[in-house]
Length: 206
Image (cartoon, rainbow, N blue to C red; front, side, top):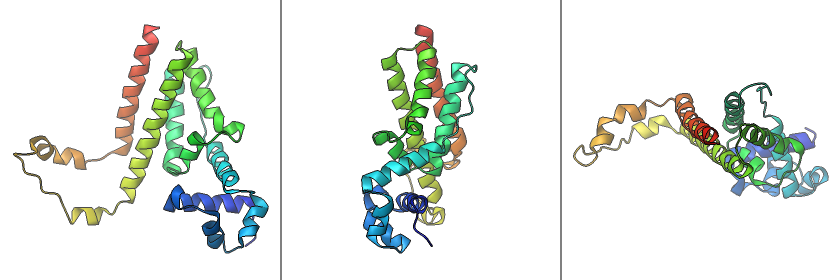
């Protein structure tokens, strides 16, 4: 199969999602693609350039359906849900979109939209930036936890249950069923609602 920039980026994304960014290297990627190292550098000049390309590719897949006429609450929630979809699809690579210097306008567009929503709601620029960081940390963190939980071997986990002493852990013992009854969507919505309420308080104070 012909080596193209698109194929290189796709394979790099798969490798990072599977093994983590720490294990990623151009040499390993070349071996995965079955091509020479110089073939990669013909399409991407460096590892840093490739990571930029991944960030652009991931960010370009974020689709925000909120309209400018919507309330700030609807806009902010829509932006958060769209970012969560991106995080669930690429939990490791999505970090590149928020940690690397912007390589294209599409990488910064979601942040620009969120900041516009917050400042138009009456918040100051410093508060808007802090809120944006808080939402990003929550969304990325919850997406990473959710994907890792889904990938865990539930059979292996259940074969070695931790037996808690009720006298030492009364609440954990009593609420065992609640802890096991996981609903990632409901958990995310609960946390998002808490953040939205906090922002609403700030808006009302302004």
